[in-house]
Image 1 (cartoon, chains in turn orange, yellow):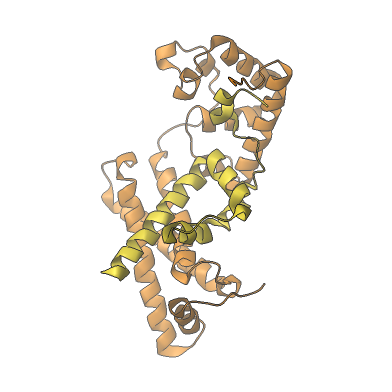
Image 2 (spheres, rainbow over the protein chains, first blue to last red):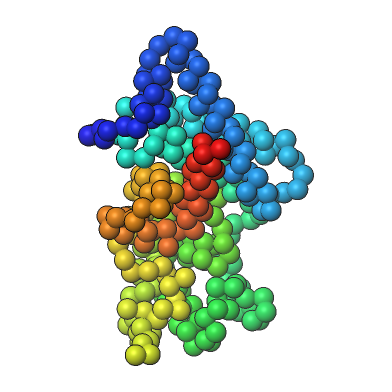
Length: 208
Length: 76
């Protein structure tokens, strides 16, 4: 893989982390300090969605995310090619680790299950995404397409993500899968539904 | 093409590389946006994915906020 010309700071990070001795130890300590600050910042940004109690647990999650991110960064230094600044590349790892843990923490006491009553709720209790359609015929056509074309696993993932706002990280954990695999299932389900709805005559409406 | 009102549920029809491929672009994209540079066309598929995937969209917003905070700290 080609390495692009690095800016001075990125080159210094890479040189120190790939070196030996005190310089490397110092660079790892500085990197760890930066990552834990970013993880705690992510928790602060998500404070409104996190349980009010158990601040210590949230901080533990931040430290775990930092440690896992640091290990990943050190093991993947050879893959860093300079497309982004080193600090941005490194912070990506801790954001992904921290956000996944925090989403799972938010959902840890909530069930994830296929809820077919979602289609029959009165309008004031319907999922917002269905309320916004404002079209009973379109909702009914979508419901028919879901029943006719999706497997049970696709229905669970599709309805959980699009109607119950279940994060895909949470689904990945509960279903013993990965974020990428869950998204692929969602993507395939959406494609099936799009074809079915187009066939059913719900073509794009143009006003021009 | 389906009714646009369904886009939030069904996603858009552009090429979507998925989470794993999309995550490869997040850092480069955030640096470009933070610098205020125009986003190259090669990010089109990644942007389609961000439109379709809430988790990746949130993570990108978080990383962009971090990059901007770091730039502010450096500028001080």
